[in-house]
Image (tube, rainbow, N blue to C red; front, side, top):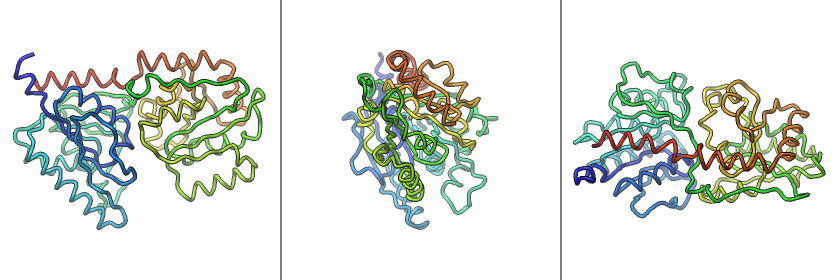
Length: 385
C-alpha cells in the first residue's frame, strides 16, 4: 500500500448526541474503525453509565455530562457539546466524521464552515426524527430540521432499515445510500451459546425498553401454568418508567407470580451476551404502529442479540415482522392470545436444539455486524483514496 493511502486513513471522529452504551451498533462501528484508522476520537454524552466503554488503545473518548433537569440545562449541554466538537475539528485533520443522530447532524451543520480541508462525512441515523410535531423550543425539533440541511454535504447516508428511507428528502442527494441492519458483532457474541437443561425453568427474556406494546402483560398472564412440567420465568432487562413498573407489579401480585418475574436495569453492553445466554427464549414483540415500531424488522438490535446468543424468539404476527422473521426457523409468531403464546413456547421447547443451533449458525455466517458494515467501510476507503 502506498504512503498516500496510509496517510488517508490516519484519523476518524465519531459523534453521537447520546451515550454510546445505549447504541450497540455504534460501539460495533467504533471497534471496526479502530482497526482501520490509526486514531479514532469519540464524542458523546454521559449520564447513566459511570465508566467508559471498553475499546482499543487507539480510541480516545471525549464526553459531555448531560443535564436534562431544565430547558436551560439542556441548552447548556448542547452548547458544551458543540464547543468541544469545534475544539476537536480545529486541533485535528480528521479524514472521516461519522455522526449518528439529528442533534449531532445539527452540530456538524452549524460548524461545517470550519471543516478545512473537508473530511468525508457519513451520517447514520439509528432512529427517525421528524421536526413536525415537536415544539420549536426543543433541540430535537431543530436537530430534525437541520439533519436535512447537512444531507447534501455528506458522502454516505445510512439507515438500519430500508422502510425508513421515505422519511428523508433525498431528491437532491448525490452521495451513497446504504442500509446497515443492527446486527450484533462477532467480537462479543461468537462464543456465547444458550442451553436448556432437563426439568429446568423456562427463562424468557425481554431486552430493551420495558413498556406497553411489548407483550409483557400477556406473558405475565400465563406464568401460573407449566409447559412440559416446567415453570416459566419472565426476565425483564432494560429501562422502565416508575408508573409502568407499578402497573406490572400490581398485575404480578394479582396473579401471585412474584417469584416468576425478575427486573434488571441497564448495565455494560459487554456483559449482556453472558446475561442473555442464561435464558432460553427471547421476546421480540412490538405491537405499536408508530414509525419507529413499524420499521423495526432489521433495526431492532435486541432481536438479533437473541439470535446471536442462540435464543429462539417469539415475535408479533404482523405483515412487517413476518417479512423479516417468517423464514427464520427459530422465530415463532404469536397473536398474543393465551393459546398462541402457550403454543409458541411449546413449539420452541420441543425443537430447542435445532432452533438454537440454526439461530447461532445464521448469526456467525450471515447476520453479524461485520458482514454488513465492512462493505460500507470499503466504500469509504475507496472515496478517501
